[in-house]
Image (cartoon, rainbow, N blue to C red; front, side, top):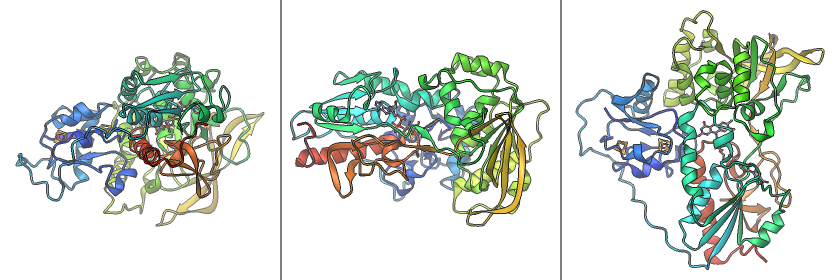
Length: 503
Ligand SMILES: Cc1cc2nc3c(=O)[nH]c(=O)nc-3n(C[C@H](O)[C@H](O)[C@H](O)COP(=O)(O)OP(=O)(O)OC[C@H]3O[C@@H](n4cnc5c(N)ncnc54)[C@H](O)[C@@H]3O)c2cc1C
Ligand code: SF4
Ligand code: SF4
């Protein structure tokens, strides 16, 4: 049976370049790479050589015959992307690759014609680490990285959920980059507090800002100042030992927690709040959070979205991870009424599979006494309900969802009791003093990573990662993104355009 990509895939495309028969798609050169929820192996083309397994930094690829029970569904999901018959037995090498040509082997980088370059990178998250890796391939480049926290790797350490152990192993790859002799990482050094951007520009030939998009979007409705309402980010920081959230405490004494928003972060938080603490014991979860979860009385996490199931922000791999966990540990509840009359675009394989899985979940019998994650659709928050300054629930306006996905209020409302209410409606970048900022998109305006002030590039200053493109994509998406920024920097250096920042 061919190899299969599973949930942990973070889209860095290393496997694409390792595969000798070009059977992993979309590749970074294909149009749907930026929007794909993971990469997929074509089972009809895979020759089971195993090269991709070695290349994958997070252990997301397994031979089909070695899939665990929880991973079985991914074989079907990979095959569905290619309309392939998973059980065909006549697949033999050499295979007919149709129009797909083998990809070019990775070549040694061409040295810089310009003289030695000393580049500053602000931040040490995935985009910074991939950028450093790319820069350090050039023998005349040295890099100094400035990180405000006392531990590196940004959201790979402080965002990725502790039970996503495979995904967190990407930090080993970053450890390898960090050991490079021409890279220096200065921790506990915040640009804007310990050093100014101007000082950085004076000391380096170029500055690459990779500071991420650290703030949550907030709900603008009455009641959000009450105790018991907060952003999901605080909970994520709390269970991941993020120093900014070390003092946080959450009231887990109520039976129900409501999470407003249904992206992957909402699913992470819902999973951790309903997990058996014994299952988390061996993970990197904060010991304070683990102790609080042992005392928790949360029986249900309600994950609520304004629009319908087809517009759900969670990805298919994350939904599969939730649906196929150990039976009896947590029930995933979907109301069949929310799926009535909903039809997926037949040409959109991911949408089709997602809807099919939601229908399967709607048909499942709940286990008596098990904690629940319940999905609700078509509900827009109107007010956080409070008593004595504490959250008691949420008032939602009911929406109907049009065929084009638009939500229209029906005029009806529904009140839901809750002891804790979390909003998880996306992240937003913050302005960097001295650099232009697009407030609406929460990004530093740029052209392929060159920071732009109107129509003019800001000499020697570049961006990458979430602060460049907004808070979208996976850890590995930052690899291609950073490579593009470094290509723009290199083109400028070679042409002597926009450099040096150093005076
Ligand atoms: C809760 C959560 C869970 C996620 N889980 C997954 C997952 O399971 N799988 C997956 O593939 N992707 C996941 N992602 C997405 C992934 O984490 C991001 O794509 C990635 O981290 C973005 O990288 P970045 O380098 O742009 O930003 P970040 O990771 O945020 O890194 C930015 C770094 O810059 C530092 N910094 C900021 N300002 C300054 C300053 N002024 N001076 C010095 N340092 C500064 C910050 O401290 C931080 O270390 C998750 C995201 C979130 C929010
Ligand atoms: S096992 Fe080999 S042929 Fe199959 S996807 Fe991986 S690298 Fe490609
Ligand atoms: S994480 Fe990277 S190497 Fe692993 S399967 Fe996904 S794209 Fe391929």
